[in-house]
Length: 85
Image (tube, rainbow, N blue to C red; front, side, top):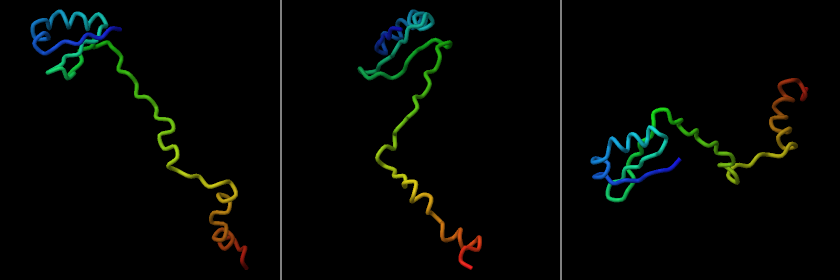
């Protein structure tokens, strides 16, 4: 699918032609002073799904090892269930 970029003046002048191109599956970007502002696409064009961000916390979180995890709260559990009688 091709993308066409046009300036605001050209978009005003050729709006019908640009809408027709969008209806045929082309993406049309309208720019103002060279900065892309809006995109014209067909109503039937599927909205792209957001990409899943796998690993976005890599290196920022630590997970305790299995031994440390298994020992968490062991004293409290022993007290609750009569281990210190």
